Image 1 (spheres, rainbow, N blue to C red):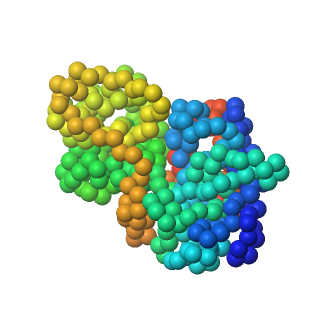
Image 2: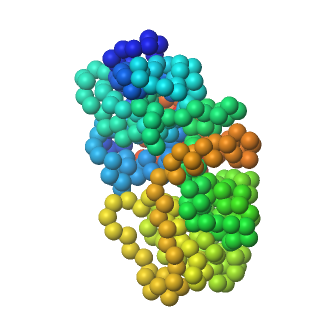
Image 3: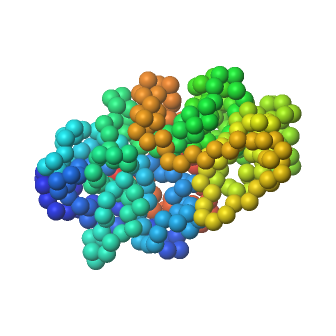
Length: 345
């Protein structure tokens, strides 16, 4: 990658998705810094399996192909626009989006929906989805997962979980684990539900009180045997699967709170109204990651050793590995992968 201070475009490589689950690392052109942008040499991009593959499969509408996904990354500033303040070449940063990718060969515009699975990013660092300085002591690899973990922190903050509350987390992917860690840090009694042993083990390491492996018969009874017959004060449905909302309703105590922590896709979602109605439940719908304050708080926890993010990194991928990994997940699912990261540097 070039290190000139100003130029019109920067050559890079990106993980480009095409229809029918086809992925390849291809040369792309990234806009130069111009007046208002910085250019970042990406070290690591974090993979959000649930949201990204929801977009790639059409469950979530992010537009057409070719597409570059990825909405969280870390790296080093290499170029700075003439009007930019607060950033200098060499700064370690975390970033939320990339702007205006084109295929290097044809010049075709790429659907750059955040676009951070790329070796370089150009973006205006200002605003809620810009860039910020990565705290000293936070590794570039673990720092690249800041968004999905901040999503969990934001949901817990929005719900108002406090010491002594009972909390059930359905789905212990990265977002669910972020919920479990944030709720446990507030002194709540957390019960995690997930069929994957690896995810349950990580949840316990992050402070979960107990975990449950669904037995395929009555998951609600399994959880109620721990939290009490009435149900939990708070239930976070973190899989993004609409079919599990009714389980969340069943596990929430009367006058309790059900948090729709996942992304449930386009269109309508049905749930059992009468049970929720009779319980007089409060329902919350977090969106995004709580923005700058949640991200900063999350990364302080990582810096201070209170959130061991390295426990979540199950796959350390090169760009070439990533193309195969994405294809496999598209065809067969994610298995027991929790939080992959792609090393671009």
